[in-house]
Length: 511
Image 1 (spheres, rainbow, N blue to C red):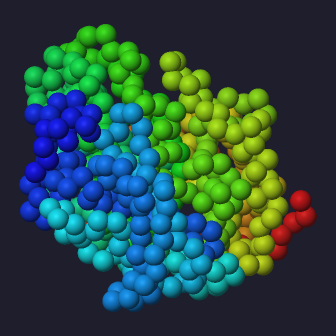
Image 2 (tube, helix red, strand yellow):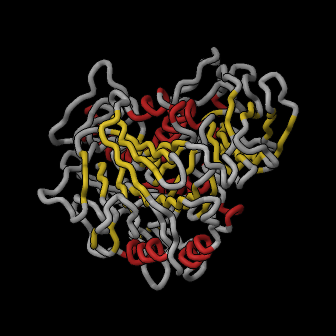
Image 3 (cartoon, rainbow, N blue to C red):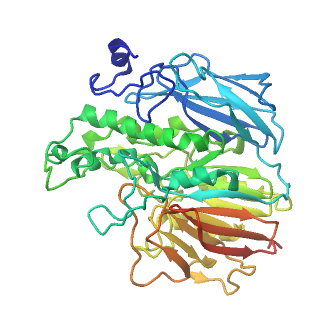
């Protein structure tokens, strides 16, 4: 059991309030482990054509994070080390990152990290992962694709599927939430593309005022230390819940507004009219600190910037991740770049992201990777209060068209909506049969505390199909160099409720 001294060293707001594991081989999500070295919240990410980054969290700093791995479960004869064990002021954990290199393509490996199954730690299996397919490998594959996924559990969203305070429905006794569905179906996809809004830990203050943690909280505003501690606890719970998936499936993330804009600041309620200001925003909630520390995306390998913009190849497809929140270039200001008392970015030099995007697209070998797919957080075509020519559309849409991006997928709005290929507001006359324009898909319906949004009475031009009453995630299947299918999977029972296939000849135009 943790001593009071060790808890104090962690900087927890209240020793008495800290929930601590009993050390019986089980870890309770959000609890402090009995052994501070216990590895928790495993997550993977591709690191170039022959690499994989293994990340995990611990409740104390590791002087030399280590991964033992091999191509057979009984032979972990390779060792990789690093010195990357970092934290930030209000975090309860340290984030450890180790990069494995010179891996064989499309090969299964087994691994364990430092202190796996140490004394008083939770019992952990020997994890496994499969490396990326080599560029040019035309073997069919599928990925999971979504945005806006929050914590599922008593401290977040569990069964509610409607906007809080409005009409609600509830998951049935035999229905699953999105994380459970992703876990049950994890053999049907090879990695995850998560395009912003990761966990929604910044909702703690709002949830507390609205009574999620007991009716007394509705009239008593939590102190700043409680908000800071509970923010970290919610974050840890989310990573704990995702770990059975992300310990074995690469989790490729993009930045969203909830990684930086701090939902605490400025929130008010009739039941708690106290003065709630941005003073309740802590380091992990601002300027993407949580996002920067927890993940290591392949920006170095692709010439990008931190976890904000990067690219990687997987078989017949070139994947790109972009930042819609900051660094839009050409004098455009990102939607949360100049928030009050919360300066977010910029993270690159002048026009760096758009210049990188053009250069990256110019260097794609479309003979090896005929498909190009972009993931980014905010949409510009959507039937829920659609924005008018927003800055992120001005920054990116024409580049997508000029360089013949095939698909771009977004979130932010909490619905699923599939459009016909469209550019500059004009639907491509060819539809899904060899269009010149890219194919936009909005999928922000994975689920979180506030529930789903509701479509406007009139759908946006080009909208082909939409769902605003069912949580779900997407599965994108690349059949060959000319056909790709996108399916919407209902989280409640993992059934396919929408499917569409795009055909592209991939006879490219001169730029």
